[in-house]
Image (cartoon, rainbow, N blue to C red; front, side):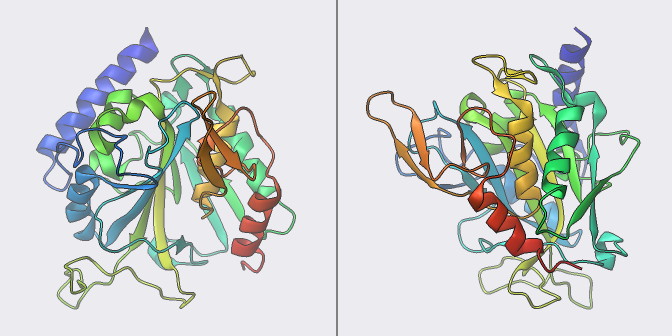
Length: 321
């Protein structure tokens, strides 16, 4: 009862914040009538995120993408990448070590868990599973990256999207968010098939007047201060969909929380989706090849990175220092 009441009050607070806070976005109707429509395969556009970017640009950052982890029951044309617009900003991002814009003085990343929402309505407490997934990525031998947890838990959910506030860490686990928030942000029906989402913010170029520098299409231009050909990541926020059924102990028919968290924290360390996705005509479910933690479709429990996953993080952080 306490968990349900907290979720309900959080949803109400999020909607109120989006209406009343001058720097926060207003909830807008989705661009498409449905989250899963025939002409959308991998990518979709969210009017909510476009609105959020108007506020974000004034604060020196921009949302580059939101990467969705979906269930095998999702329709074949369900989008897996959501953008704030459909013109630019689709290139990969990367963390910059010792980036003073993140108040970073060493080659580490920080993460924080909002403990009050790190509790699934069906699966119970999940913070230990979140921590275990971070430890797994930290343990990849070829990577020099270390992600360190910040404690205690922040007083408010660490979400720029919902509250217009800069989060306290590089990687911010907001926790289990009501399904209605997923529908409002990503389109009607998103809560039926979306397990979780990682939203990436990048720093943008700002002129001497403090205003964002825009490209010819009117979009803020992300920075690349170390000239690695990738946008400079500012921070990430991660949501899990509380409308679905979870478990921490491998209960049949439920989503394994640590598996989902490992995938989302893979996005947090700049891994994209791996594998080809096809529909099985016999079962109607989605299949992937090759198998990986970073498949965009969740297919059972997988708590250990596989070949493609290891290659991705080694490529990103093998020379990180």
